[in-house]
Length: 93
Image (cartoon, rainbow, N blue to C red; front, top):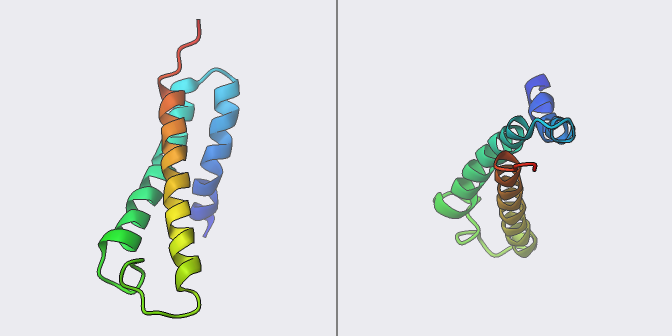
């Protein structure tokens, strides 16, 4: 439980590191947790054959909200990874 809290606080610490001028460290601290979540979530919700796959869910009341949230989560995690990569390659003049 404590490990999950620490991992979830990494992006907040990354913003602090970014403001202090540690761009590469900040980028890594953003990309690593969001990249892992993106890989696991994409596999679970789009590639696996289980009931968590958005394409193979049985028709129920919560099917559409689950599908929308899975797609939005994937988009937001990918956007976060892109921002982290931009922070990693940031060069100040």
